[in-house]
Length: 305
Ligand code: UTP
Image (cartoon, rainbow, N blue to C red; front, side, top):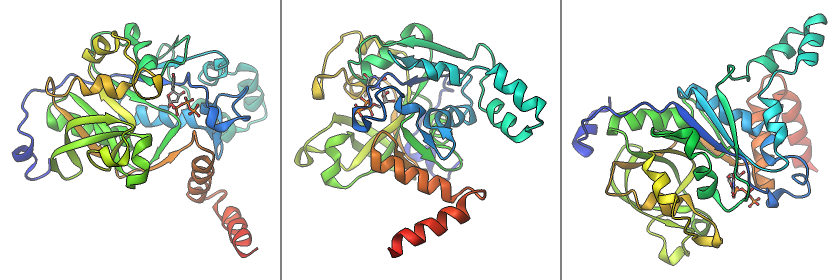
């Protein structure tokens, strides 16, 4: 435990464990057309793994046991990705391609740990999260937006879990400082007391104009939330962009439970954006001993052209 932490956040009660994670994957991916016309953006690969698999691995590292996907039309291959591929597995096994077989099996959650529900209409992230209410039930849960790839050790959700237990539960969001001109694309935090990388959340504004932003501290795609959020989402109120915003529903929880942001030390790549996706592939590729030398040589040759 960090020295001085209790002075800043004097919380006591032991929070309920977070066992379930909601992964909304029903978005239309319009920023990445035409690639995402028939292929879900969550299935686009960073090096050799689909973006969504990184989120599942991060959640598993943080202790998540149940993975709830909120899908939509044209997203069925995400279900196939988290299932056995018998013919392929048998073929790889018969040919003694152990590494390839391992790469298929290591990403597979155990039977019964994955469930799927449909959002039916892409009415916004708040609506996607609300679509999972019956599968979450009356317990805390995490939300991971898979197109936000967070790379680091410990993982972003693991860092948030640690903070969640230290501050006594409630809501915890991941956050990053952004340039002022970029805050209009994010949920922005009105910060209170801070202790190290954990900041009390006093208010939230979705996609503010820079002049109206309470800070430059922006929410990124990781949340730990309480089931009370569903009652707020039940209202079906729309916010910025005419969508049902999770930020607006979260804002109504402030004052009713501890609410904190964790400034993550992980690197974030917005893989729903073309440039962010290319950046992720280069950055993750450079950490991979099997491809880094060849990739470095290519980058060098491109730079000198
Ligand atoms: P984004 O806003 O990045 O997704 O949502 P989008 O709407 O697909 O993106 P663009 O702007 O059209 O390119 C972040 C995450 O929330 C999911 C998305 O699938 C993505 O994983 N999402 C978003 C839903 O599940 N339902 C929605 O209605 C909106």
